Amino acid sequence: MYSIEDGDTLKILPFIENGKLIWGKKYDIVGNNSGLVYDTNGYLRKMWFIHREKRSYDKDYKHINITGRTMLHVYVNGESKLIGVGRKIIDLVTENKSTLFDLRCNDHILVSKDMVEVSGGMKLPSYDNCSVITKDWNAPVTDINSKEEWFEYLINNQPEPNPYDSKYDVLNQRDALIDLFGSDLLSEVIKTERNKKLETILN
Image (cartoon, rainbow, N blue to C red; front, side, top):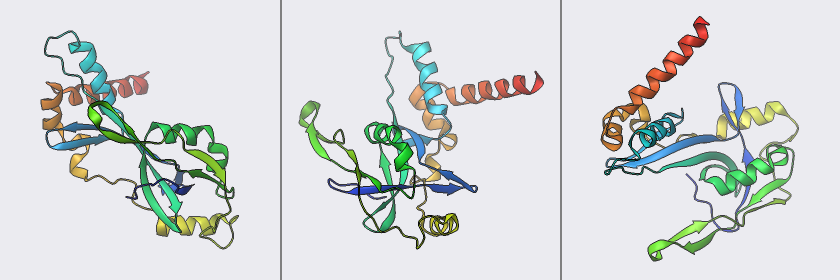
């Protein structure tokens, strides 16, 4: 996975998944004793909500922090790369998606990466000042208007959108999640989801 740096210019490209264009893939992530757990189905946030509702008044209540990370396919320095970004850059992309999601458009994200001090003297990167710029670029296809050329390029060059080992998938970390949340909330969430689907089918 590519680590974006100050001054990088990023042209957002889609992933092709099951024949469809996907402009980024969202992951929810929570840390635990074994490292991390990732989720793409919304299970972790539903578990967090149940945990907070049930136990927020307990003396031993433990706040659990779930972070969102979106994987983007970008063209940078003449190559297709995978990057992981947080809310600031995603907000910028969302506000400008009409041009950033147009492969024929010259709009790029200009990365502004500042190291800011947080509690305890620790410094973390801030992307608050990233912006959208218009910049000429050498597209990796001969005809920028050709859907066929773009499709061929993306199929052959797109990065794998999941940078995590499958063993850390939420469905493979049930025991670790029981330790983290104090009970098997994953089974509770899945059962509730299944019952809702059955009700929809039957009604």
